[in-house]
Length: 212
Ligand code: SF4
Image 1 (spheres, rainbow, N blue to C red):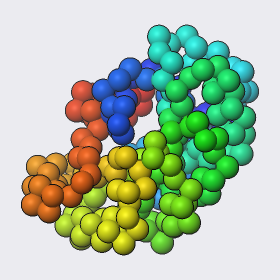
Image 2 (cartoon, helix red, strand yellow; image 1 turned 30 degrees about the horizontal axis):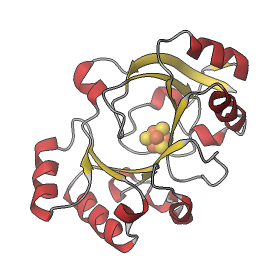
Image 3 (tube, rainbow, N blue to C red; image 1 turned 180 degrees about the horizontal axis):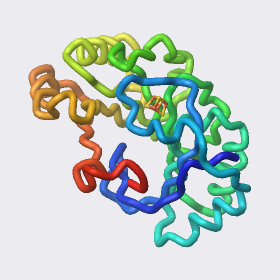
């Protein structure tokens, strides 16, 4: 499969943020979110076999791995990688755009599924049927660019009972666009049962776009 990068860093997203984590970022994504922070993963990369990827990951001092992109599910070979990592006793996180079918992902994988708010420009790509397949250990992430996105998220949380489907619904401000403190105030005012996500890797290494 085509790989953009493999690295070891602090997980900055989701309920495991702050933990040392190995990452494998697959090349390619069929979406074009206007605020995308990984456009370098749209093309290029290197063709690698599953065993080579696992060997690289095994060199890191962790058993937590995040399979991300791009859109990792856009490459069918990712399923072999997920199975191989589970067989090797990794705790496996999968970050996905929410635009592709997630129902074939092995049950032991922790899926972090985006819902694209209107400010992304890709809201029409949300695959709402995915929500029916989510388990409590999965997570839903909504990136918020402005107040309109926040209101959209609030409506969808209620309409689709999102906080009853999964333990963790994450709201994450677009880095450099929406002041995190404003989003925090909106969440507090509404008592919204979500987790504010600040992307620790960006706070730690603001000038780096790769390897974090
Ligand atoms: S789904 Fe992710 S990788 Fe794809 S364009 Fe959106 S933010 Fe970028």
